[in-house]
Amino acid sequence: MKRAYKLVLFVVLVVLVSACNDTEQLGLLLQPEGDKILLRLDTFPVQTQNGPAIPISAQCDTSSMALGEFYDAKYGSTKAELFIQLSPPVGYKFAPDSLNPTPDSLVLYMYYNKWFGSKTSPLELSIYELNKQSLQYDKTYLSDLNVSDFTDQSILMGKRMVTSVDQTLSDSILEAENYYPVVRYKFSKEQLDRFFNIPHSAYTSQDQFAQHFKGMYITTKYGASTVLYFNQIDLKLFYHYTYKKNGKDTIVNTSVVYPANKEVRQLNKFSNTEVSASEISDSVVYVKSPAGMFPRVTLPIGQIRTKVRGEIGNRLFSVNSAMLVVEATELQTGDLAMPIPEYMTLIRGSKIDDFVTKNHLLQMSDSVAVLGMYNSKTKSYVFDLSYFLNSEIPPHYTKDKTDETLELLLVPSSVSLNSSGAITSIKPLRKMGAVTLRSGTNTESPMRLKVIYSGF
Image (cartoon, rainbow, N blue to C red; front, side, top):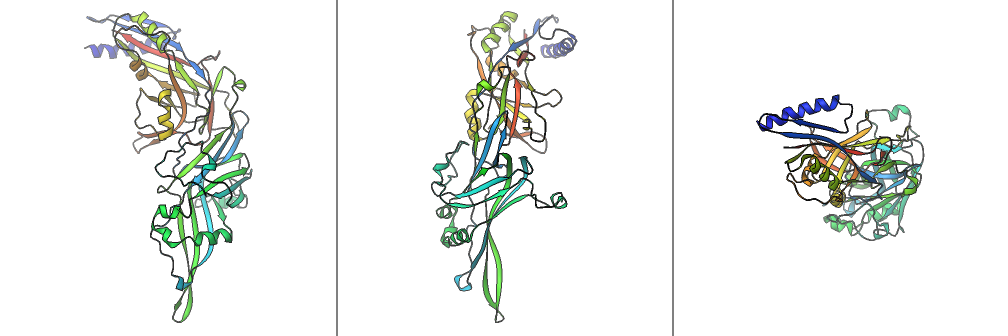
């Protein structure tokens, strides 16, 4: 019966709240037969602060290998660079020397189906061989990688200019269903011969191969208007050999593929220019990805406890709803407007290291992190912090510290769903994104926490 009373009571409260002009303050006392439940709706201010750039996991999967640079007058510049290993065909046997195997070409293929920025602005790619440390498969790397740990950039394998949309192709080709954007680079004969002459014994294992070719560092030296998102990178070695057939020489053309796949490492280095705090109004906070600005949101837990106990006394306590309203403002327009992150994770500050280093939340727990989705109609994110407050405020009366706070961070995120629509993973967003949010001191509509709670 008690549970039934609560359900009826909650429905009544929702109706009354929607019909009340002053929804910021509401006290309602209902007295079901044999029971007494006190309900309250209170709004609590939150503190906000712009945060510095925070590195995230450098490990990128084969669908999110970012490369390029983009400058935004408001949010500053973001640069994405790549460190990639190549997976050799373990056990591969080249044609024997008696058949005179001869190298023809060494070509890097970098496929992408998504990009951000300008269609026509040039971007210069530079490819360096890793000649110092190898990338360790089981090591955790963060996105603020030190390039000099892996290469002294003395071996420039090649460079070329590209645009996100190939300007040499006709519209009919670009719009064809079977067209797939790709950056091709044909290496010099010097690089071809050097790669072809890697000892055949190196093909016995990935580790053996890495002793002779550790991988590539790919960066951009010119252009700040485009970021490409590669979803497949392959190096192909083309060669031929000759054998006698019916007394005649027969040429066989073949190739060997070295993919950047899950068996080896692909790492992203992200660099963001710091936006000076003096350039940002107190009325807003900035969010930016990847590895950019993650604002701090501080909940006044001590004040909330004091307020709650002042209202309900020694009654048992329960939070029915706790909505943090986060509104976007100063929205950009135009083709080069920064994309607004579709999802945002509000996570305890004490758990941010786990989130960014492990590149995902091991388990979605409402008392650790809460996911919010951008609503383009209301131009806001809403986070339900009921579990946060229920875990922070004991159900029974205790003497609490009135100045205690809880620090949370807003992190733009990517979400994977299964065929049933259930969330399978949440990761820090690795693609370009930014949004300006109203701060806790915004005079028009401050960030705030609306709490419905009950004492019984």
